[in-house]
Length: 394
Image (cartoon, rainbow, N blue to C red; front, side):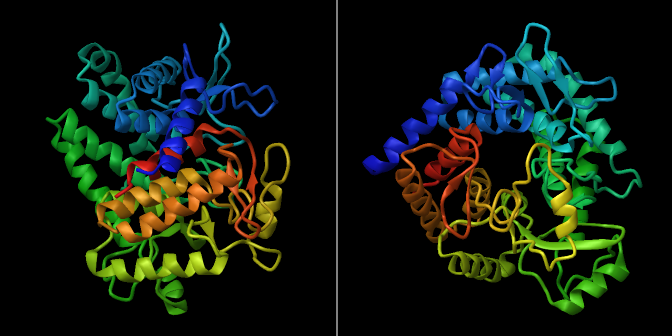
């Protein structure tokens, strides 16, 4: 590892260390604005904690445990894990804004099971196992139609200002990961093993637009209408009863690859598509979603209407074509399962250059047109993404 990557690694670890407090890992250290970053956010803290496990970092691992305890203590009777919890003596708890957050519960399942597997902490296991199983049960409710895919409302996951709702790739991959971890770590449940296999098949059958895909679809009419427009070399972002979202979702595809959902024969086309994106935006990093939604797109009005504080999703920014280091971390991790070291090295070198130019600020995202860092900094999400990329150095 070069000195520059060592410097990047140490600075990224330092961000996570500074964000670790007695209640867990904050989304951003020393934040005081109304946007609530100094809270224990389920997805942010658990992703950071998983990186801590990868690095064997005791400070971050302890932060993961505290985050999981904080989240577990605020689980609803139905099994829903909060989106975020304040660190006040009497904590404020949020399960979402205008819609609940599905991915918070999914990340809790993954984080708790990975912590149990890594630490072999039997006391933690006994304290959390009932809560893990309650979380797994509410996912069955979220299927609504008993057809193996969970339904995410608008604003129901990390891309909470992006106009997608329904059966999303990202959330269903997280659900599959949690189920498979449970069967590997806790064991003894044929029902969960069967459900994991059913979910795996449902994702493969419904999220690939391919003329060779002969499986029964959720919505044959819409699927056939989309396939006429052309195949997609990746897993589409999602669909609902009225439309398919055929854009590329970097994080969702990274998770899908990590789970081994892409057939080896399909890999060359997937890599070619990634390289086309890199060429189009002139940087070897993937936007969170691509292509962008602009004024000519029928989703643009939905995009403009969906924001919490200020509108951030102009083309090439934020969720709308913004480059998020954390999602590139997941994409690279997925590619590593297929030993695609060449493209991973391009990605980690590209991010290193961005990090150096911004003096290691770990900004929230990078605009895909100007390549300028944007959003909050130093964000634990971005420090986590950097550490994921560095871990894949070969």
